[in-house]
Amino acid sequence: MSAGNAKSSAANNAAKSSAGTAHVYLVRRIVVFGLAALIILAIALGIVFGVHALGSNNGAGADNVGSPAQSQTAGNAADQDSGSKDNGSNGKGNSDKDADAETQTDGKDDANTSDQQSTPEPLTDDERAAILSKAEQTATESGNELITYTYCVASKGEVGDLTEFSDTVFSTLNDPRGWPRAGAVFQEADGTDPNACSMTLTLAAADQMTSFSTECSDEYSCRVGNDVVINVDRWNNATEGWLNAGGTVSRYRTMVINHEVGHRLGHLDNELTCSAVNQPAPLMQQQSMDLLGCTPNEWPLDEELWVSE
Image 1 (cartoon, rainbow, N blue to C red):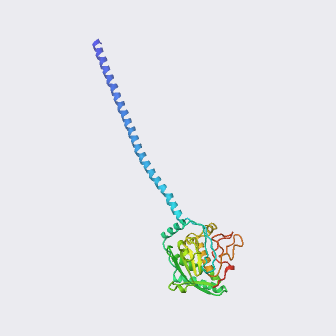
Image 2 (cartoon, rainbow, N blue to C red):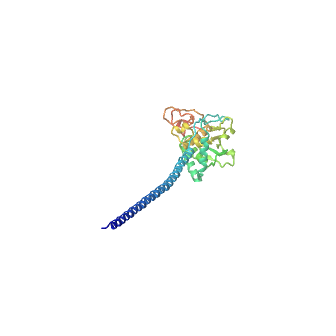
Image 3 (cartoon, rainbow, N blue to C red):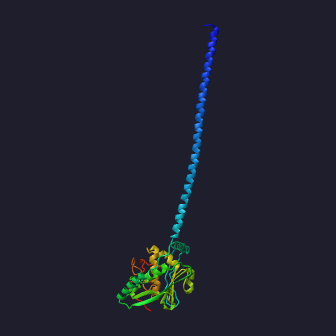
């Protein structure tokens, strides 16, 4: 081979090598840029999905924060107030008191709850007739003189609908476990003639209690003459001691009606008191103040089965 041909061949080889190297670099750049683009895209997608997920979690957290608050509000509406006592009366203006040491805010909460509930259906004439018939049978079989008391139902102040109060009074006073065992039955008057009422049972707002007598208090229930006045706070909440001893609001309502009407029938506070631990307390004991080791009791004991005009 001549020197010229050798140089030409070397130049061609060098050119081919240079072109091959450039091609390799180009492929590498394409691959590198492609990978970089994929990485950037992946990072961007990760950021987008991460922000979206964070927003969703924050929303769920807000809902969870709200739930306990709503539950606590509902629970507060079911909270009870505390303390009470029943003091005796001689029927000449002195009061029979259901004393307590409760806070008044709980009574307002319960009143608001009651407002949201539907008004109960009143007892029908047939239902009342059936209840009264059983009461008369019990009174007749008691061996005591049958006495029929005619009473009126009233309200004073902001106490809400009286349907439940009226039904509870009638059912309680004519229950065979109660005063019918002493020979007494009770008929509700239509209210058109106040003089026809042997007594008037009034559901009264706390701030109206002293309007019946200066002996009454805004914290208590009381009886003044023929007026049997039930404090709406006690009606809605009972007392702490009563509830802690296993009593309920429903049973307290029965007790306070029977207790206060018992004063109208001639009974005094604490004429009998707890004789043995874990025995039913006498009805006329001041159960709202202290059960003295007895258990809550809403009905007159055998020893309390008498009435006087």
